[in-house]
Length: 116
Length: 111
Image (cartoon, rainbow over all chains, first blue to last red; front, side, top):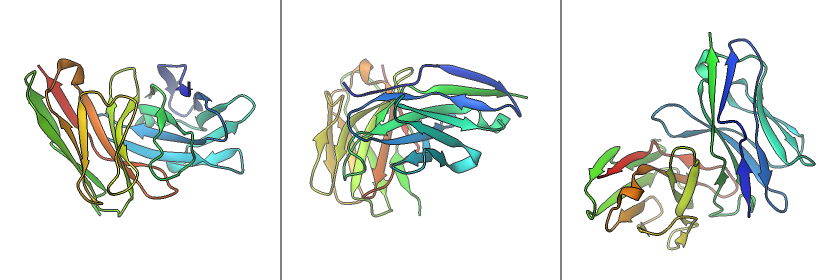
């Protein structure tokens, strides 16, 4: 079965330190990969995506993600965390690329807590 | 542009009651989706509509029906609500070849 795993329910990091939120996937073919962020009582906001090309993808708010095909991973990173980065982060996979109507498979989410 | 809008924002139902969740997008997107979000389970797809006039089941369609009223609007109906349908419901839309855009959500409680 196709799936996305976010092995950490919560990640705690001090402000100014680098952060990593992990994601691995089990999908056949060449999937498209996404990260979304959800602030309390809000909808999901798109951060970045990997389709093809450079394995390091840069996105919104200083976030980036590294695609590793051999490890089937797509970890989210940021060099210097901010308290305002505290939120719920979702990794998602589109098994069929971005064809019309292709639904996303989501991980369970990782809560990022940045302390001052 | 308002993006993706959902109504209502909150709703409390009694078991057996029915209701319709409304979703509209003003971005001229072809595809629309309904997800539910439950703690520790991420988002799960209920139904989707690849284009106007078509709808398909997702991962958890039981207990729900949908209508793609036109290109802008995609509604989700609960005919006989059950406590297991207590959740946060998100509508999303996407244009061809791009990521999905999400609405603010509807928080539903079924007593």
